[in-house]
Length: 253
Ligand code: TMP
Image (cartoon, rainbow, N blue to C red; front, side):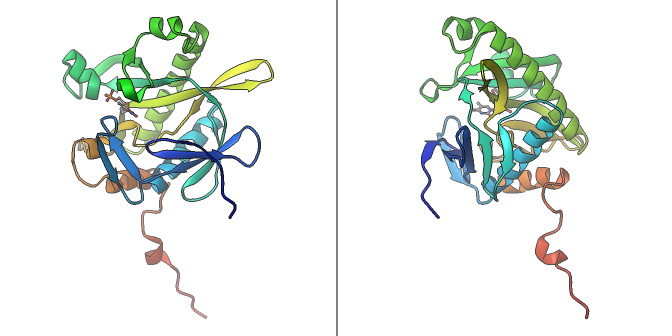
């Protein structure tokens, strides 16, 4: 196969030039990182699971008219996406207090929030992705007020969709992070969901047992990350519940 041009390499993914202008190929690695890459491990199979799960969520969003960069999955580890102009923000939506919100404001993990809270973090590894206010974003020109209004509306639609899908399989969507970008159609600009949506960027708790089924399993050393992600995939019907070898049919005559 011809060598492809690498456009960008991040902690969990690689972007290659796509087959047509305006497209990219997004490759999912097995690398897991936490705490701004202070903790790093290779989790065999994570890339395959996140590719499938991100496909499932992004395609679902496309289907209900929430725009994303996702075009189609190509193979086990790669998907075709639209090239977007990334906005340098991590957009976090929270339904239940956990993680940095609990720490910063002293609210017990697991406390239901009176309404979903949308937060912005400035994407800069050197600074450790600091929390920023709309004032900073507008003053420093990372996005306009109109962009921010669109981003909040988009993030809340993603929250409604993901919460509903998860509740259907017995999982509570505690919080999640999305990244967004701009797509230009002639002179018209649209904000779309980009990057990935997977258990790497969500908090997912089993409704009955409270078991964590997301990257906190890795951050907090709570067991097998691959097993937790497989459980999410299995419940969503993204992975067969029985290993293929077991279900292989026997031909009679
Ligand atoms: P936090 O409580 O650590 O701020 O995380 C909020 C949500 O954002 C949680 O679902 C994990 C996700 N997240 C990322 O996807 N990437 C990150 O770098 C961080 C800090 C959080």
